[in-house]
Image (cartoon, rainbow, N blue to C red; front, side, top):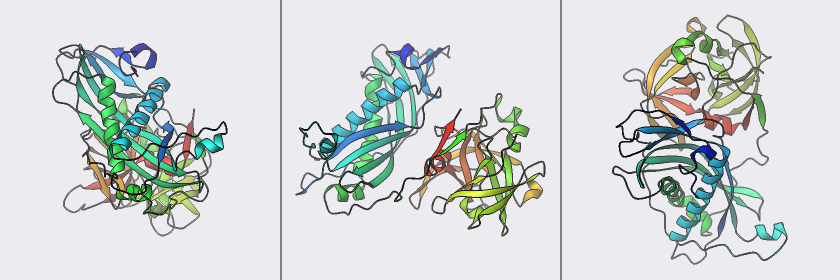
Amino acid sequence: MKFWIVTIASIGIIAAAGPAGADPAKVKEVVAKAALSVADKPAIKTAIFKKFQTSMLGAEKIGDAQVGWFCGNQSQYLMTQRFADAASRAIARAFRGELTKAGYPKPPQAESVFESAQKQAADFDVGAMLRSMKMNTCNKSGEVLGGAYVEIKWELFSPRSQKVAYELTTEGSYQNNISEKITVDELAERAMAASVRNLLADPKFVELMTGTGDEISVAASTPAAETSIKRGRAVDGGVSKNATLLRAAVATIESGFGSGSGFFISTDGHLLTNQHVVGDVKFVKVKLVTNRELVGEVLKSDKARDIALIKTEPISIQPLQTRSSEPNIGEDVFAIGSPLGDTFTGSMTKGVLSGYRTLNEMRFLQSDVSILPGSSGGPLLDGTGTVVGITVRALDAGRANLNLFIPIQEALSKFAIVFRE
């Protein structure tokens, strides 16, 4: 494959001077599960890897690449198209390898020139969406020190019933503490293989593949209509130098039975907020920090994920930009909202990202940044002023700042939001 560091110039790794003598930063650690073996099952269905996508394309840094015994020369990993293509091949190889190790059969080869017949070669077509990736490495003349982390959304599509029969998002990581005589490719692929094993450890996946579970569609009967909106641009100088500009993109949302917060993600007038802020109403009042009031139409809402998409008239306010990768634990984060109503609109508080949590099968970001009733639906920003999450709830605001935020990419994916330049 040889795409990680050997072909630096061609895949989007930009060289930059870096400090000497520092080991690469550790990536997020994921608990590794053992794949559930199906070797003793009498009837096992087949699956073939068919499709790969990533929401991370663009000149975005996903990690650091250092070189030398003292890890002095530093470059950056960027998610270019060639990088994504290489990642696709690596994920496909990891999927096939782990499936075989767990006892799943290889799909039969379809000897037909017709595509429809070829699709029937396996019971399920497998798709993978690479939603997040971090990689920090140091190449010490053939030995590699470092780690890799991936988050992948898996989907199993049934050609027979023409529907998505199963989906699951899993994470995987690999981190060594001493340099190993492996390639950077192999290190990254070990993280991908760990994500595959966490997929194969899900009992529902095993039930579906062994014929004991029904093919229950987890997708809507029709795909979510794609929403194309104009992307906001990143601000220069970070949060501290752009507080006024960032606060202007956050509004108070009034639905008639209460108020919350929301934030603009396009100049077309699109805002994101919580479903519990808008409730079941079709129209809401959107009040800007300047006290200007707009009428907002609720275009989409999802009660389970607690998100809603609102549309107002086009505005001249610079919208917030969303981050396509998840922040690291320990990063500074900032919440903006209207705690206790529009009297305190545009309030900004600072904290750190405390962790990642899963509650009721939903993923959340956890932070100690202060929020109060009325903050719901506001943005959680990283230090650059880019949105990483949506404020949703406080677990115990009376004693400790245990606050939860919806990862921004999950909201964008749920509503099929696609940005255009």
